[in-house]
Image 1 (cartoon, one colour):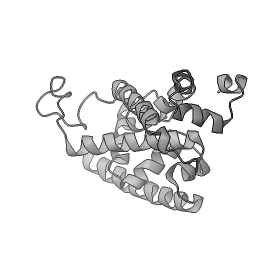
Image 2 (cartoon, helix red, strand yellow):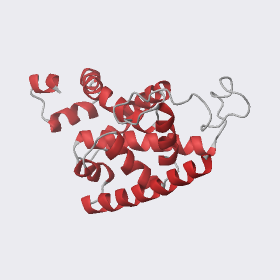
Image 3 (cartoon, helix red, strand yellow):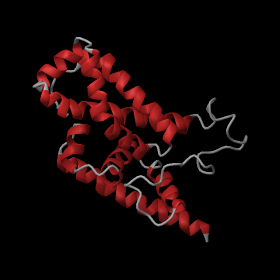
Image 4 (cartoon, one colour):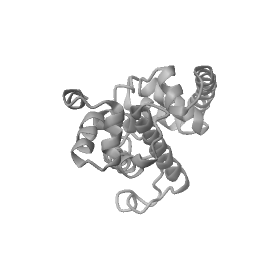
Length: 200
């Protein structure tokens, strides 16, 4: 953001330059947000290559859709909204297509997302459990939640966003975010309890 400040671009002027497809401004927008967007993508999809692909998709969407941006939220909020939508879309595809074309050469025919080394990035700051195996089980359980609960739990507990930030990204009230978070925690407790009960 320092570049923007040095050039005295207000957010309104920045958005106008983006709508004019100013590539220099867009390049600096990427420099400002790419690591934050990458961190959020890793929170949902803990595989470095897929997270990097999602970052590219996010900024392509920003570039192509900026003309539709109405300014009803901060630009950063809009970018995070696109990011979470891309991540949830990816997770949806993983659930409905257990053997996608690009994964077939890498894994055996009995590939499932539960039984591979797909989870490469458990050094993410949001994953604080003692072992990779525990983190993997937590991630699998999170993705079994209803989508709204997956979204809000991941943004808060893994990506470290406040309830206020999540409310802005999801276009919900803070009380609604808190309510969904409460349900997510309860459902996670049941999922993890059932998982470990069946393990022993």
